[in-house]
Amino acid sequence: MDLVLSPAGEEDWPGIWDIFRAVVSTGDTYPYPPDTTEEQARTIWMAPSHVVFVAKLGDEVVATAYHRPNMYGLGDHIANAGWMVHPDHQGRGIGRRFAEYVIEQARETGFKGMQFNAVVACNTGAVGLWQSLGFEIVGTVPDAFRHARLGLTPVHVMYREL
Image (cartoon, rainbow, N blue to C red; front, side, top):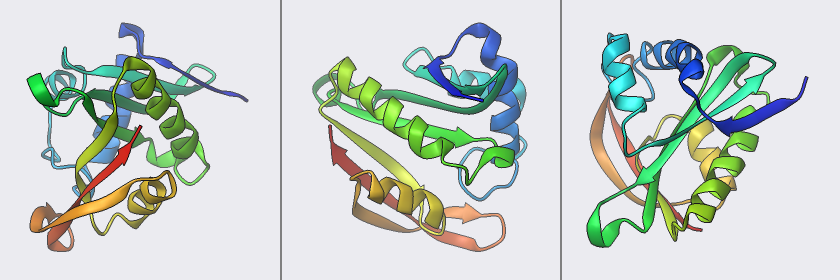
C-alpha cells in the first residue's frame, strides 16, 4: 500500500491522538508529560502556529508532523518541527520519507533553515536520521531531559539550512 503524505485535516485528529498518546506515554523522546490528556495534546500539536501533516497507509494515520516558526518576528525565517511515527510503524522508512516531505514543505513555505530545540541525545534513531538528512548538532544541553528510564539525559540542538 502506498504512503500518502498530506496536510492534516480535522478528520485526522483521532489518528494523530493515537500516535501522540503512544509516543508521549513512554517518557523517552518528548518533553510532554506521559499523562498528557487528549485536550492538552490537541492544544499542543494543533496550535494555530503549526502547519500539521499526516502520513497515511490507506485510511490509517501512521505518522504526524508539524512545522512552525522557531521564533517570531526577526527569527521567523527559521522553522521548528516535530515528528511522531506510530510505534507499530517505526523502522520501515516512513519517518525518512515523511521527513523529506515536511522539510520540502517548510522550504516551499519560505523558511531558510530548520532547527530542532531538543532532540533527546539517547534517541539515536532520531539523531541518526536527522544527521543523515543534513542536520548538525550545534549544541548539547546537559541533563535537560528527564528520561523515564535513564534519568537526566542531554538534549541536542540540531540545525540545517533549507
